[in-house]
Each structure stands twice: as C-alpha cells, then as structure tokens.
Image 1 (cartoon, rainbow, N blue to C red):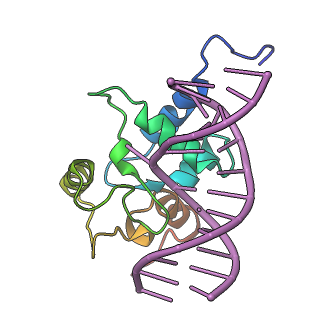
Image 2: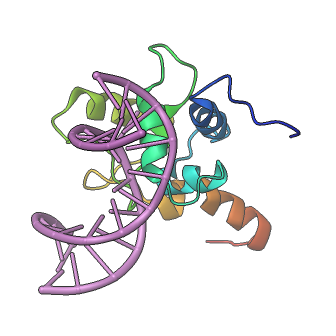
Image 3: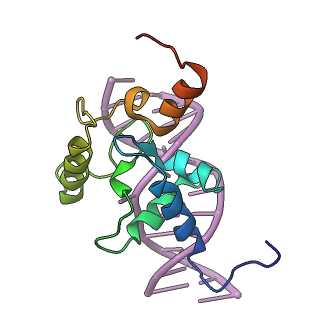
Length: 122
DNA sequence: GTCTTGACTAAGC
DNA sequence: GGCTTAGCCAAGA
C-alpha cells in the first residue's frame, strides 16, 4: 500500500471480519488466532471489539470464534451463549462440558492436518 | 487530548 | 482443573 487508508477508523474491524469469513463451515478459531491472521499480533481484544461491532444479520460467522481453550466468550446463561452454541451445533461442532475440542474442530488444526498429516488413519 | 472500557491471553496460585 | 491477576492496545466518550 502506498498510502494508509485512514478514511475508515474501524479498518481493523473490516480486516477481522474478513479473516472470520475465511473460517470454513464446521470449524472454529480463537480470538488470538484471528488476531494473528489479521496481523494484530496478540491483540485478541481487538477481535472481540470488532465482532461486537458487527451489524445484526451480518454474514460473518462470528459464532466460529471462541476464546482460548475452546470456551465461548459469553457466560453460559447468556442469550449470546445459547445463540452461538446452537449455530455451532447446527454446523456439526460438538460441545463437551460447554467447550469445543479445538484439536478436532480448530481451523488451523484442520489445515495443519491437511498439510502435515494427509494420511492419518486415526 | 485524556480517560475508561473491553466478546482476550498467558502465567501464577 | 479452575480462579485470579497483570499486561496490552485501540475504540468510544
């Protein structure tokens, strides 16, 4: 880029949304991972703020973004938690004790297996 | 221009 | 294994 795009103060949001859109159906990622892919380093909180700024009805699969450890970012009794969990389960993501196994459904983990373990029987 | 807030993470207990 | 604390950094007021 020859000049910084300063016309949009929330450019970070756009980048984050773009990264989240790359998460395939049935897979999940973490805030930290999205932040890294977006070039934000470990600014995971920026990702949370960006997702929070998403308009209602946005096509961005925000529900595929989890906190470290595969846990949701919301308290279990919140409406957002129920919404996120319902959407993930509808995509085939399984929950165990209110957590998602990132080793099975993690985005990068899936790519990693494709790249490094293309013939793993189990 | 400054202060507060926050959908986080990693480390320590 | 789960909770608490400290650190980080940009957006919003």
